[in-house]
Amino acid sequence: MREPLAALRRDDGEWRAGQAALEQALAAWRSDPSMASVLEAMERFAAGETLAGCRPLAALFQSGNEAASLLVERFVSGTLLALDAHPLGQMPLAYAPGDVVAMLVLARCGTASLTLSCFDGCELARAEPRASVVFEPVESWSRVIAGSGTGELIIGEPTAASDTLVLQRRELELASDSIHHRIGAREKLHVRSASGAMLVLRLQRALPGEAVVREHALADGRLVHRAAAAADDSRRELAMATLRAMERRDAVPGMRAIALGRGEVSLRWQALRELLVLDLDAGLDAIDAIAAASDDPLCAHVGTLREAVERQNGDETQGGSWPS
Image (cartoon, rainbow, N blue to C red):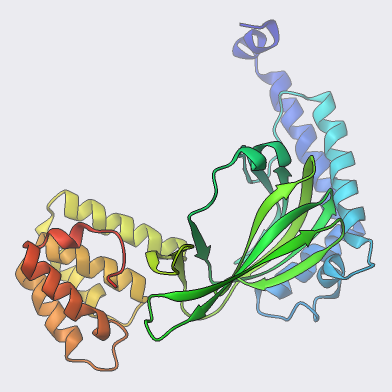
C-alpha cells in the first residue's frame, strides 16, 4: 500500500481538512453573484416558471451569450486548485462516472437539474451501436461548452398501434457553442462521436403529467420496456416485486388497491402483474374490473394479458414489458 493511503488509515485528519477545503471552494463558487443568481432562478424554474422568465438561467442557453462558458470556467478553475491541494479529496457533488460519458450535477432543485457532462471520443468510437431509444418525460436544453462531435436526433411519432412508434432519425453536428432543446417524451439525442473530449452543459426539468419512461426498439419502433419515471413509483415497484418473491400473501389487498386505483399506469400495471403471480384469482378479478371500465387507460391491454395468463398458467406475468 502506498504511504499516503497507509497514512490515511492511521489518521484521517488531513483528509477531513481537505474535504472541508473542497466544500469551502464549492461554497465560494456558489456564492459568486453570477452563480447565486442562477441558483435563485433555478428555484423559480423548478416551481414551474418558464425558462424565459428565469433570465440568469436562460442566459446560459442563449446563442452568443458567454454566461455558460464563464460559469464553467469559474467552477473548473476554483475546484481544480482545491483538488490540486487535496488530490485524495472528493468534491461534494453528485456524479455519475462512466467510460463513454461522465456527468457531474452542478445544481439541483426539485425536478430540475443543471449538469456538466464530458464525452470521451475514443470510448464512443469503441461503443456498441444502440439497439433501442429511451424517451423520458423531461424537457431539456444542452449547450456544447468545449469540443465538438456528432449526434443523432430521434423523434418518435405515434401510430394506430399505441405501443409502436414511427421513428424519424437525422444526424446533427454538435459544434462548439451549439444549443439544442428537446422534449424528451418524444425526442432523444444520442451522441455518436466526439473529437477528443466534448463538454456539454445541460438543464433539465421533469414534464408535468404522465411520468413514464418508454424504451423502443430502433429497428421497428416497438415498445420493449415501460417504467415509472418517478423515484417513489420505482421504489413501490421494487417493493411489490420483493413482496411477490417472498410470497407475502398479506400484500394482496394492497397490490389490488394499487392495480384498481387511478395512479400512474406503469405502477398499476406492475401491481397487476405481481398480483397475478401472488394470487391468480385476485389478479383475474382485478383484470375483469379494469376491463369493465371503458375509460380506464389499462382497459385496452388487460384482455391480452388475460389470454396470456390463461394460456400459460400465469407464466406470462413474469415478463418485464408491456404487452403488445
